[in-house]
Image (cartoon, helix red, strand yellow):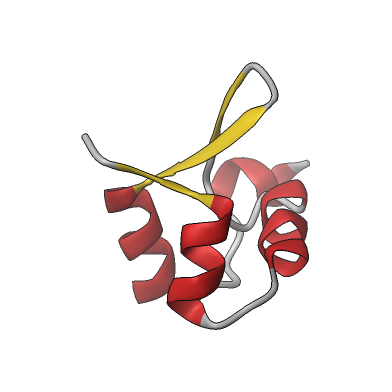
Length: 63
């Protein structure tokens, strides 16, 4: 598995790190938290982009 940092994601899709953190907080971008560090798994990121980058998962929609 390969993981990206928030900064790597932000640079990749030309957004500010704050916007990436916002997407994570809202449950839009799947991430894992390792202590205080946030990482985004490569395959999950690519799937998120393929889905348009704004869709909530079925689990999050029910909340």
